[in-house]
Image (cartoon, rainbow, N blue to C red; front, side):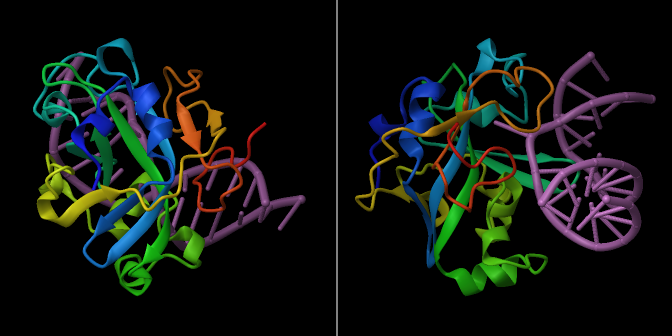
Length: 194
DNA sequence: CTTTGGATCGTCT
DNA sequence: GACGATCCAAAGG
């Protein structure tokens, strides 16, 4: 289980540090292979760019919490908050490589055709791990709702893949998406370091 | 393999 | 009233 200090820092600094950590929920486990940094008030693409609101409140509640939001009328996505209470930055979990509880993930994602499709997207991994709005605000340091991030001894990539963020129309040029180079479980967007 | 359009609704303007 | 930090199926090469 990672200490709170692990999550504290600028999102662009914390994001690559999260690569190769393991998201665990009970019998389910998956290695984090892709993330994106969202820098709050300084980032027009961040939900917190225009300040606090009902939806983004968790982003303002301090490092180590899970910020879960609903989008496109049907999908949940999860972020790890990384700034002190009162400010708002977070790292979007974009893809994980299934490690354990894979059968349950298949059951949670009947649309998936290949193992690669189980959690290779921000809404897909939430489906695979049954993460919903009920999990918004969960404290990963305390293991709220069985959700934790752990270090299994695998270090982050010495040189992570870097690219612009996916699916946004402003701030999409900032190199704030990070991934494990060459890992097939990475979502849409570049998979290899250029 | 790539491209395209539909689904679907809470949030903020 | 418009628009998403997306996903999927279908159609075309």
